[in-house]
Image (cartoon, rainbow, N blue to C red):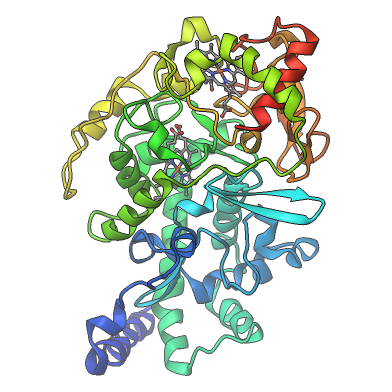
Length: 462
Ligand code: HEC
Ligand code: HEC
C-alpha cells in the first residue's frame, strides 16, 4: 500500500518536471486547432469539452481492442454509427485536442451531421440529424469497459503499443499512475449519474435523452423519474427559428442560450467552454442551407402538392405562417407527452437560477405542447415527430391507428416512395414502449390518396 502511494507521488513529480518545467502552461494546454474552413470548424472545432471531460486519446483508441467481442472488433467505434471522414483519427464531432494529454471531446457535429445512401454512394449531410448514431450503446460500451478487468494499465499500454502508439517510458508511467486510474473513476462516476437510463426504454440510433443527463450532471438534481428520449433535430437554417420556440417543446427561445447550454451539455465547464468557437458555429448555421433531396422529384406533382400544403400545413410550418415557431397545445396535437412533462417547472427554475457562468439564462420557460417548426430538409429528418415514432412521411399522413406499431431505424438507405429512411432493417423501434407512442398529429391524414401523393412530393422539395 505504502509503496503504491510513493509510486503515485513520484509519478506526479516526474510528470510535473516533464510538462511544467521546461515548457510551461502553453504546452499543457495549447490553443485548440484553428480550422480555416467553416465546415471543418463545425465538424472538428473545439467547444471546450476536451479539457473538462475529454477521454484521453491514447486510452480511448485501445478500448475496442481490449473490450469488444472479437466479432465487433473489426468495426471498432464504427459500430456506434458515428460519421467518419476518411483518414481521421476520430469521428466527425469528436475534436482531438490537448489538455495535459491529447483528449477526445464532443462537439455539435457528433449529433448534427447525418448521411444518406444514394446510387452514387454515401452523401454527408452537414447539419442533418445523425440518424444512425447510437450514443447510448457507445456510453454503455465505455462504462462496461472501464469496469471490466481488461481495463488495466498493462493491457491498455500493450494495446496502445500494438496500435503503433508513441508513448515513451516516462509518459507510460504517467498514464499508468495518473491518467488510466482517472479515466476509470470518471467513467464510473458517469455510469452512476446516468444509471437512470437502465430503467427506461433504450434510445436506439438517432435519439438521445433531451434534458435528463443535464439535470443530473449539470444542474446536480436527483433523477426525477421523467422520460425525455427524443429524435435529434437538424441544426441548419436557424435564422428561420428566430423569435420562435427551440427544443421540441419550445423550452427556450434564444438561439444563443441554446448554443451555450449545448456546449455545457456536451461536457464543457464554466471555465473551459470556448465561446468564440461556439459563436463562430452559431453564426454559420444561421444560413447553413438544409440538404437538398438527393433523388428525382416529379415537379408537376410537387406543384400540385404545394396547394395541398398551403391549405393544410402552411399555417404552422411555412415561413410567414401565423403559428410557425409557436407551441401547439398538447391537447390539440395529441402526440406522446412524456418529453413535454419531463421539462418541468423545477428544471426551468434550475436553469434560470444557474450561477457560475459568465452569462445568465433568461429564456428558459415551461410550455404546454410541442413547437410547430419549419420543415426545411424534412426528408432527412425521418423518423418523424419529437420521439421519432413514425418511420416516414407516408406513415405520418396515415391515421394514427394505422401507423406501424413497430419498425426499424438507424440505416442510411432511403425509401423515396414512403419518404424516409428504409425501415425494414436496423434497430427495432416499438411504439408501445413508454415515451414511444406514435399518436396524434392527425393533420393531413384524411386527405384523398391523390392529394397525399402530391403533398409527399412537395415535402421532398423543402
Ligand atoms: C448528443 C447529441 C447532441 C449533441 C452532441 C448536440 N446536440 Fe443539439 N440537440 C440534440 C437533441 C437530442 C436535441 C433536442 C433536445 C430536446 O428538445 O429535448 C437538440 C437540440 C438542439 C437545438 C434546438 C433545435 C430545435 O430544433 O429546436 C439546437 C439549436 C442545438 N441542439 C444546438 C446544438 C449545439 C450548438 C451543439 C454543440 C455545442 C449541440 N446541439 C450538440 C442532440 C445533440
Ligand atoms: C396546428 C399546427 C400544425 C399543423 C396544421 C400541422 N402541423 Fe405538423 N407539426 C406540428 C407540431 C406541433 C409538430 C411537432 C409534434 C411533435 O413532435 O410531437 C409537427 C410535426 C410535424 C412533422 C415532424 C417534424 C419532425 O422533425 O419530425 C412533420 C413532417 C409535419 N409536422 C408535417 C405536417 C404536414 C405535412 C402538415 C399538413 C398536412 C402539418 N404538419 C400540419 C404542428 C402542425
